[in-house]
Image 1 (cartoon, rainbow, N blue to C red):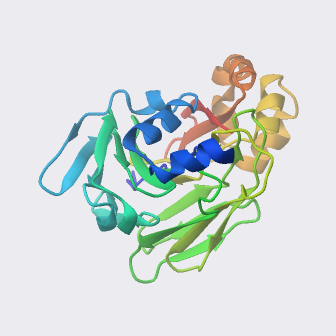
Image 2: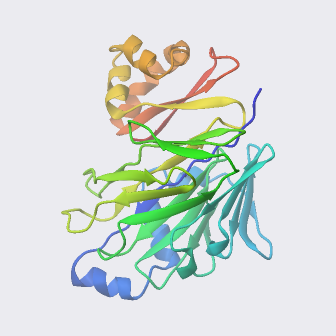
Length: 302
């Protein structure tokens, strides 16, 4: 069974955007660790994602977690980047505007916040499945719309943008991906967002909030993923597909468009899909490459 690194994270960007003079005054005070944690707490299911994570620290690391064979090392100095390692391979994810960050602070299980004196800040969350979310909190309408992530990948690696807006990250020893990013304001209104890449190691997330009529906070979620450490591939379903699956409609065409073996395990999860849709979430599945008859279903934010 092939073991590979799974990065989820990848990051959720929890974007807490303020407006008017009250927000501007708050932004002058910077973005504190409390601001970051409050933004994370406002995202349904996100705070609970790391409840079971246990971390250690040392002279250089704010938190070191080892979950499901994946080691996540979050530095005290954000400029050193987040190191994610599994099965003999390590990738460092360099955070946006890391030089502006103050020392990393643990705000809850598995979460490290990097406060700043500016209007946006980073945070990193190691979740209960061994993934890592890279969180960004924006504290005012003057915060940037573009966030740059630099990945230190092995020589010969490449990044390509897929038709659906997702990214495929290829290295000589493993393939990774980033699901299509999404962003919603506090009222559930979708906010425009997308990825750009230089094709080599750089990824830019753009969230269009300048001058937009939005309610705060805004939450965006680009997710890093790959073949899981236990040998499965992750298949994500849209909200429309989740709706159809919850009602048993056009199952064959949906499954065929994703990956046929997913259908094998759906009979065990069909009764559950209705509740997932009613919670305004989407279905996802882990499919074991060596045994496609085994499928683990779960829910995620759309």
